Length: 157
Image (tube, rainbow, N blue to C red; front, side, top):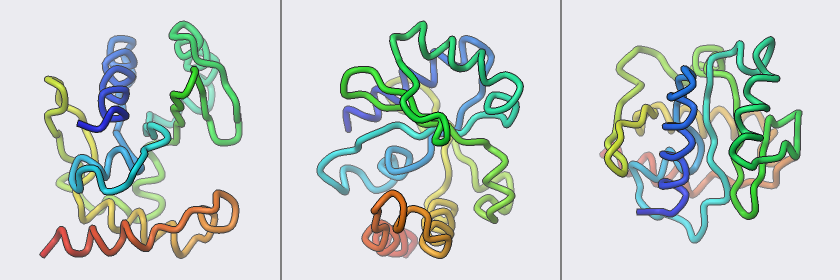
């Protein structure tokens, strides 16, 4: 199991214990379908209900601080603790960006003895294709998702 997957489960369990539903997203979420498709997974990306990035944002900051995390990038909603990094985005992006087309695009996957909600491979493919069109990940974050897109396309065959 990818170490970052274990970290993701710990974060998700902790946030669930405080009433916050999470969806595992990003490369760690994709790794649930593709395995260890790259050398390292730098962070855990979690989608949370929109209010936790708006009016309940101070509550989320406090919850992360209680776990020893410090906010390092408010625009990206990113926290760090030692070498661990957790970033948050709103669950609303799934519909806004056309990533989740139906409830069946969300699945629960057993991970380290816990059911984690994440996307199907087809929904991850739409997410990575959207990011490639959007250009933000390429221009700002210096990410190239072409390999992930190719692997997700092969996964569906």
